[in-house]
Length: 111
Image 1 (tube, one colour):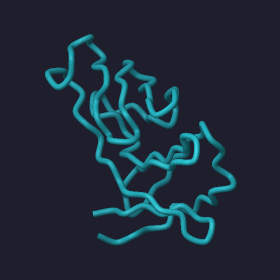
Image 2 (cartoon, one colour):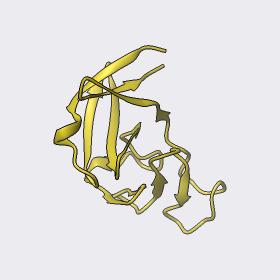
Image 3 (spheres, one colour):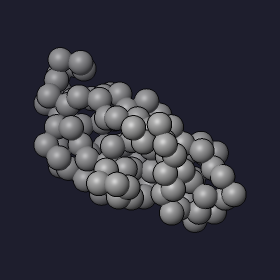
Image 4 (tube, rainbow, N blue to C red):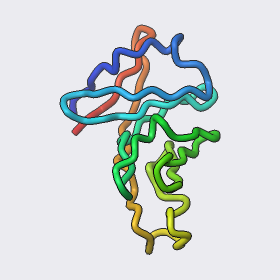
């Protein structure tokens, strides 16, 4: 799978920050949690909320539309918006993308 530049310099992404980037038609959410950088789909699988507008709590991103909670390290669903215990709820896992930092820039591996 090819690596694609996010255009984000690591020094501009402090711990606890999130950024949305559009790469080849894919909306990707890039987050920094401590020294780690994670990337997942930037659109909620429940009803299409923009996750960049959500709340980042450590590795958890909470969708601003209906409150689905996802793990940015794995893309997994942590809480369904309707209170149904995953994986039986309406939210499905987010696609997770590998990340790397090369020459101070954040890159993601897209399919």
